[in-house]
Image (cartoon, rainbow, N blue to C red; front, side):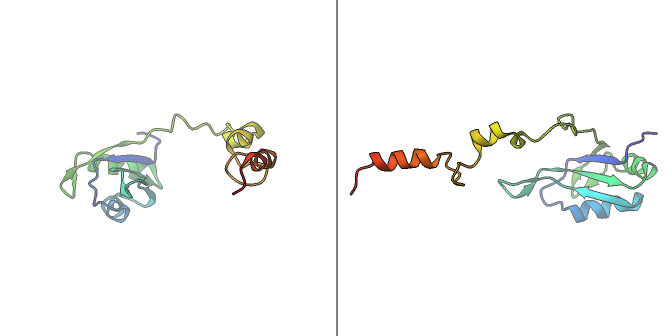
Length: 130
């Protein structure tokens, strides 16, 4: 038996909600979380979710029973979720360093235009007065 407690659930239809997934998976044991990623451009679910159980045994039971089953006329693809290979808990945020902030962050004056106050003053001097 696997020591995992989290499942990937794929094949979800666009009308499936986290509450519906929760209702479908709760019969196999107590859930810790149902995470349903959204496409923020279209404000719709991406068609998959992650279901996390409190116990490994409940997770295994849900996998056995739900893989290949149907939910809202769609066949589910259920498997143990894998770790995020891009995630490194020891890494620092890219914006933590001064160089990133200078290159991409707020200007000296707090504006997000990337120009310093001196740059703006120089432009004002060159600008024709109307």
